[in-house]
Picture 1: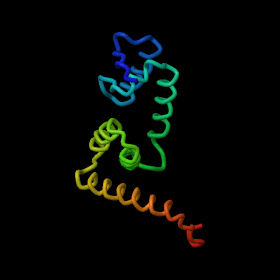
Picture 2: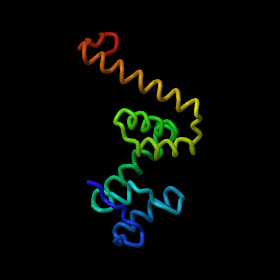
Picture 3: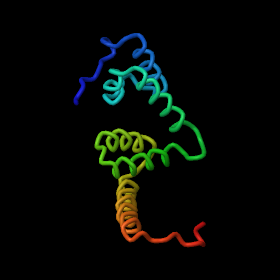
Length: 129
C-alpha cells in the first residue's frame, strides 16, 4: 500500500508537533517523506521519532559511525529510501566517497560470510566466547 505524504499544512496539531520537533532537532526547514507517510498513524510517528532521537543521539558511538551502521543495515535490508536518507546524513557528517565504497565492500563481505557460516552451521570457536 502506498500512502501520500501528509504535508505540514494538512497535518493535525499532534503531527505538526512532531514535524516541528524534527525540524528544530535537525535544524532544517522541511520534513522528509518517511515522516510524512508515518503521519497517517500519529502514535507510530511519535514512537519512531522518539526512538530515533534516543538511538541516533549522543552516545558511545560518534554520529558518523551511527550513520554508517544504519547504511550497512539498510543495504542488507534493501531499503533504498534509508540508504539515500542516511547516506545524505553521513555525507553531511563527513563521510567520503572512499569511505562509502569501503562500507559497501565490508557490508557485502559480511553478508556473504554470514550466509556461508549459517549455511554450513559453523560452530562458534571457544576462543570467541
